[in-house]
Amino acid sequence: MGADKLDTVRKLLAKADRAATAEEAATYTDKAVELMARHGIDAALLADARPEQDEVGALRIAMEDPYSGGKARLLAWIAAALRCRSVMHAAWGGRVEAVTVIGFASDRERVELLYTSLLLQAGSQLARQRPHRAGESVAAYRRSWLHGFAVEVHRRLDAAESLARAEAESRRAHPSSPAGGRSVALVLADRSTRVEQAFTEAFPSLGAARRQSLTGSGFPAGTAAGRQADIGQERVPPRRLRAVGA
Image (tube, rainbow, N blue to C red; front, side, top):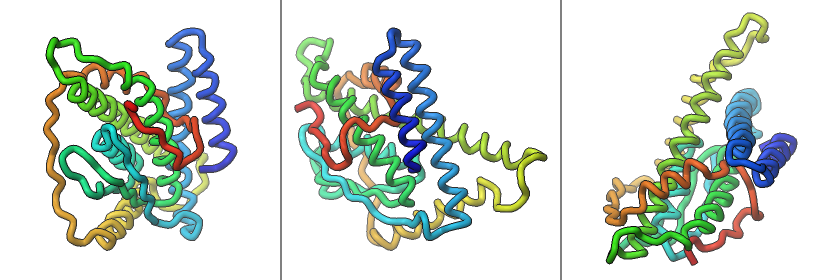
């Protein structure tokens, strides 16, 4: 991600952190989300003319308990929204050892940036979560809360990416737009194909993942928290990821 655009995103979210009201904070956060999504499209179009500047590669991020499975799903859904593929390693009994993300460099950078921020945001809230139903497992409630958080984050990111694609197509179709270059849809379709090819080559014998069953009742509260999460903020340097719920 360009240093100037990244700096703008950070400044917008810093304003959101200092906002006097939730509505004001949401205004700054939404703008940061929009800017990051637009930059993702811009990077893709630029790389179509200069492919050597943005190549497909892999990023492996270790997961730590507690709730390593929930953190892995959060990372995987961020990756999916930002046009990357992912695979969970040593996933068994609700635990995941690591996640590998495959995608273009510009998209992997966005994935890591968002995951680092959202992991901290989730962690700051998850430790305070308690079930409302008497006798319900706290761990089960927190797992379902984190699942709801991830679902809502994915929905918001997916919506922002879709809007950015539509706006880029509209700009290219405008009479005043300089001619030349392929359509946004074709560029993104080709990038998706290359990511899929790289993913298949890296994991040729990968089977379908088994869907995990969650029993806790924290999904609605987690979804609400995901709706309010700051998307696009880097609070700590990459690869220094604090355990959620510790």
